[in-house]
Length: 320
Image 1: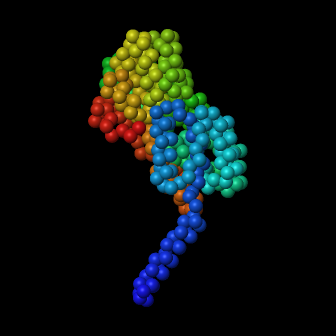
Image 2 (image 1 turned 60 degrees about the vertical axis):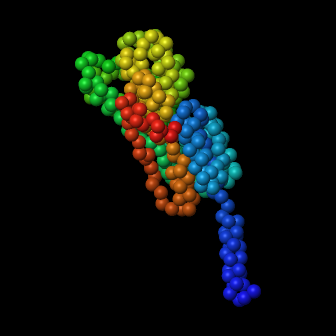
Image 3 (image 1 turned 120 degrees about the vertical axis):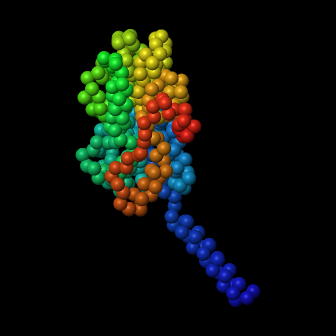
């Protein structure tokens, strides 16, 4: 073997050894993630996005389903702390009640990222960043669409029933506030009943049935804080002998494929997008936080509004 060949072989072996040592020295990033639950099409798509993105990034994901209970999330976060994960991320069931457990994470020097829904804490340093939609703006967009629709109609009044999300959750509070703000200057638009449907299809149907029994044909508009509740309510409207989308305008939020199918069927009038596909952004953000890089405190997802008129054009491109 010539000197040159021995030199090249030796260099290659050294490079391979160095790569192996580096791989051993840098174990996969471990993230503990606590999800709200599996209450809707949106949530299922959000979970799938996070799991797929973690796998693609070579990140070890420890996943916990809270089944829409805050106490389950607190337990999961404490479990992640005990396991000494590199980072904790969670989508909170409700806004408040997180200070104690997040202080425990901070004391353990484990950074936290809040996803999808915001939290209210006394110390903003308890989490590194919040990535998600602007729920207030989503409510405003739904309200603006309805205000524009009402302005084109000779109808004197638009009586609205509202299906709210989970009590105390950020999207429920913010979507209600944004919608109310957008319709405040329009005397034709009036919310006559408002009740939680807990973001589920079954509860949306149940509450809409109650609205119809108490208000009947006095209802002109349904505003639902998510598509799943709207789809459940559509079933209740049909069972009452009315035409959703015609006799009662249906306005909802999320932009799931089921909403587009309902629009194609003429049963839903508009859906405001709230993208669940946060996985890739979350994984990159997690890497940056663990690496000590500066990150924005608030990252807002870019989204749109989809009236029924564009459903046929857009449905093929929907990923959730």
